Image (cartoon, rainbow, N blue to C red):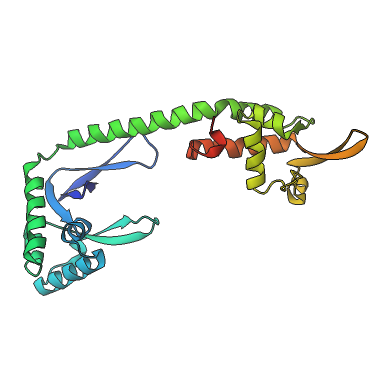
Length: 250
C-alpha cells in the first residue's frame, strides 16, 4: 500500500517490486481505491486521533465489519508502531453522521479534492518512486565523497606510532583546530584544561606528553594513531548525519 499526502491507494491485489535502494520496497497496485486515513480525518475535524479511532471502531462494530480490513500500522514521531484506519468514501460519510456540520464540510471538501485528482498508473508510481530514490542515492554519495579525504587519511595513520597535537589532528581531519578541541571537550575526551581523561588514555586514543616551556614542565594532550582513526570515523559519521553541526562551521 502506498500512502501519499494523507491519501492512501489501497490495492485489492498487489505485488512487490524491488527498488534500487537496499531495504526499499514499492508495492504497486493493480486496482486503486481512494481512501482517507483516520489521521487526516482527525486533522480536518480538529479531533484527537485516538478519539477518531474510537469512533471508527464503534462504527465498524455496529456495522459488523471486519476491523482488520481497515487497520494499518505506521511509525509515529518516536518511531513507535501505531494503528490508523483507512476508510473509503462510504465509510467516511457514515462516520461523519455523528460529527458537526463544520467538521462534515471540511471532510467533504477534502473528498472533492481527492476525487478531482487523477490516479497515477502503477508505472507512474514506480517512476516517481525511482526518481525519489535516485535523489537520495546522489545526496548520500555526495556526502560520502565530501567525507572521503578524512576517511582515507585516518586509515593511513591508524598504524602510525607517532602522535599529533590536537590542533594538527584537527587540521588533518579538515576541521578548524579550535573547533576540534572544543568538540573533544564537549564529547568528554578532554577536561576543561584540555587534558585527556584517563578512560581515553586507557583506550589508547590520547596520551599525555610533558615538555619544558620557559623552564617549567608543561603537560599536553596528544592524539595517537588509533585515536586519530577513531576521531576521523566519528567526524565522518557526524558530517554524514548532521552536516550543519557547529564543528563544520567555516
